[in-house]
Image (cartoon, rainbow, N blue to C red; front, side):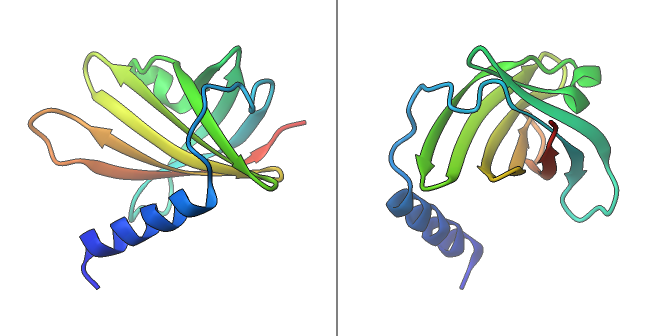
Length: 129
């Protein structure tokens, strides 16, 4: 199966499980500590991801000038999907698509920068108490 077909199949499956995104603050007050990795790498930057007042923030992205951003969620059972777009004047946009299940956050972060190929990154983090 080629990559475009596989990506479309995953998106369709997720859409059938989760309702449409809503502008809710379902994750507000929660923070997660983990690592931000470029796809294919085995080490990356320590990251704290936080949700507060309807805004999403990644501490690993501060040094690159990325802002915090509004986030949206949808839930199915005990799993919550989220998405956000953070921006940096120098490095472009980061498209965040992730899930929170129990105390674990998993996200794919695509760096979109004009004139450059997109770069896929991953974040895996555990909730802080």
